[in-house]
Amino acid sequence: MAKKQAHSDHGPTGKAVGHVNGNEPAATDASHSRVAELSNLLDQAQTQLHATLEAKEMADRDRAMLAHELRTPLTAIMGFADVMRTELLGPLGHEKYRGYVKDIHCSAQHVLQLCDAVLDLARAQSEEIPIEPVDIRIADSVDKALSMLGGMAVEYGIKLETEIAPDFPILHTDRHMLERALINLVSNAIKFTPRGGRVTVVAKVDPADGAVILVISDTGIGIAPEDLARVMRPFVQIKAAQNGKRPGSGLGLPITEALVRRLGGEFELRSKPGVGTAATIRFPRAIQRAA
Ligand SMILES: Nc1ncnc2c1ncn2[C@@H]1O[C@H](COP(=O)(O)OP(=O)(O)OP(=O)(O)O)[C@@H](O)[C@H]1O
Ligand SMILES: [Mg+2]
Image 1: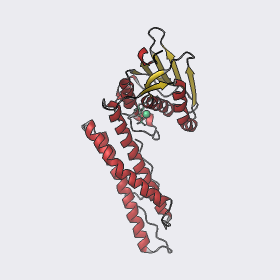
Image 2: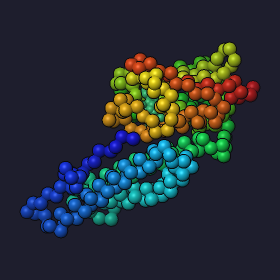
Image 3: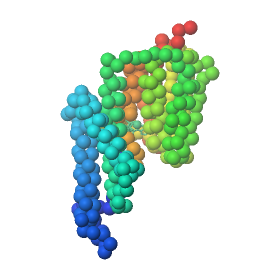
Image 4: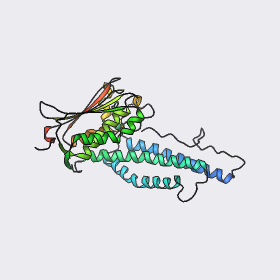
């Protein structure tokens, strides 16, 4: 996960730089330093927590448990930070406090997103979570995914396109799982495609065996052959692709693969560095709604 940029004013030691001017009493300055220190400690805790959650030796079950346990205090921290940010109970009193509160909210939000992704992976891999099949018009699900990610596409300067075969059948499967897989793949395609590029979602049926095929392709940076298998593992992100500003925690692809498998399908990633990537989901004919 890209580390957040601190908004506060820190010195080379990592401690807050106190600005003493003639108008500020010393006690106020000391409390600024204290809050800045707290904000720094939270930053360190965030880094430590990432490392713990990402540690290979940690069992999936323990990781899911830790993520679950952390959700409640993180939600509370975010709630309190929000009350302070909006000055609901009174003014914060100093401009710097606003920066610290923003940092605290931002740190908590990052860790909360990481916890949610860890829990999503555990759920996708668990046989105990039931599949709830409903009839699905793929055009609706694709529209939903693309409109959710429309803002991101505009921000990254990417054109979104769809090619849905006119005879594409109604599917009978778990809507939430299918849409989550689509969203993960389209968001990757947008994130890893340079400005001016294109992301296309194709839905078609294999005439040979009636298999249902969804392909999400992009004109992006691509993935080197030696990294193709690696990126399917939790927490793996290709450093060169991050460019210092691509958000995420390296869980989208493993979650997607687990979801697709859970729905009885197969997932495949093909890529050519500098040309683009195509992610293919293939479901057996049986996923089509019975006539
Ligand atoms: N379409 C793509 N083009 C190029 N590289 C990709 C693409 N999709 C994934 N990758 C590479 O694979 C890595 C893992 O992808 P994955 O979706 O699991 O994690 P993420 O997108 O970094 O974070 P998250 O999905 O948790 O927000 C990415 O960090 C990136 O390096
Ligand atoms: Mg992703």
